[in-house]
Image (cartoon, rainbow, N blue to C red):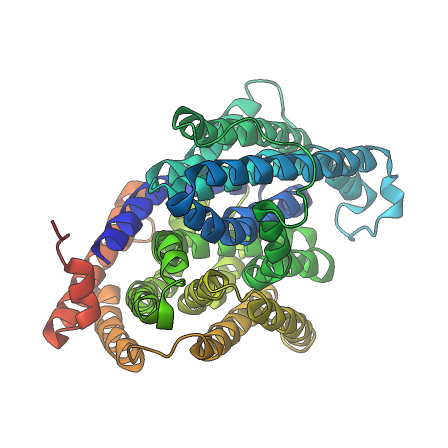
Length: 519
């Protein structure tokens, strides 16, 4: 377990740098393009390749590949190398014609054929098609990056794959900074320039993860073509089918939210949903996702043991760690959401009514953070034991449920985009509860997580009682002073109070995180 904690900590530290750069990028996007139809159209075009990145980078393909690759690494390293070559070649074979088809179709389909929103009209559809022709190509390198990253994690290399998003963020930031000096003045021109830069950034990410695999001689020339029936690669892709749905509830819900916001509210409203997702991903990547990525190879390895006692213990400890770190993160983000939005995004073309809409939308989404993390953790446990159908069926039902709740809230309340993110949080709760209960048939619980919830909520309550009184900067203070006095100081004080509360309660889950590595 200590090795898992160290791996999760390493991922969190590197991911922190990436998320900080991501927030800088989002700040530049909001202040450059505002919350108008150009920004909304760009974000909608970015959603599809980004969805594939989430599915394959953090879900389906890695979840199917890692268990098989981990087992072969133990018994037959040469067969593991062959598996990686076959999977890489299959991804190239499948995605290359798809990307070319989508890009070509986006260039030849008349914009008038698409349903246009009131704001932007046909011009918005023209921009959407132009951006999609460029951005969808990004799906190819980023999916290959997912395969390589999963292999590196199995080899015990967690830090390098975690640095991949840093490269993309640097490319994106550079594009936004250089757009005006290069002569791109109109918003649609800036968006198009950013799209081309992102496509280039995708291939840079792929180069970063392929280099160590080639140096370690863990990857040879990709074998193009579809895998033959009965091979390990064929089994990976068969298992991946239902896994796509099972691990993608949050991402599919995000896509649905973008579409509903674009057409039922306004194209610019997509900005509020996007920024809310970014504020969710910041604590999620540092807490729940770091635990889930680090623990998955271990779960896959222990799933082969008779009785799965060790696996269940690992799963329960990981779930306790997820609760321990996500509950205060969610509460703190909600408590400080107004300050976060002001410090991070306000300025340029972003302000006024955009602030309140983003704050409420983000608060409703971040409330589901602990359950998003637990659902992803339990989904990985299902895939580790070879059960891909249960998460898929559960996710399929909940996606429909999410759409229904979203439409009902949009048509019966005045919540706007907050209705969409509240619906996503509700379905995340359902997903986590259902998966945790259904996994009991694979392995009986080793620990009772009820008391972990109780202790975390008590400590979080103490934290929330202190944080509001630690804000010391005035609302009109300079940005750096406001960020320090109203964000960094309250966050630091809140973390200290939270840890002290757990120490007073002698929480075993905190002791597990603090345990020194065994020599």
